[in-house]
Length: 108
Image (cartoon, rainbow, N blue to C red; front, side):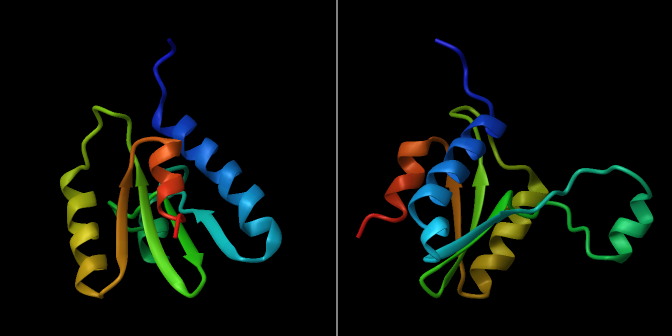
């Protein structure tokens, strides 16, 4: 069995969310590209933030910050700081390791 990457997990979750919610105008899910291509200082000056979650989802009035990791992946110290800042604002932060786990966020 092929080992899943963080990127593949994120892609599968985005496609599933798009097909089930975004396409029907029920929510918005978008990625937060935080890689460094170009002037690092310019990116910092325009809002680059180390540790920011992979995606942000606005779903039925709730804002969620979602980080994707493999089964063995761990969040970095910067990601942990970002998670704490999000939760201190009373918002939701999720660490997701599979499509099935992601789907559970939306089961009511």
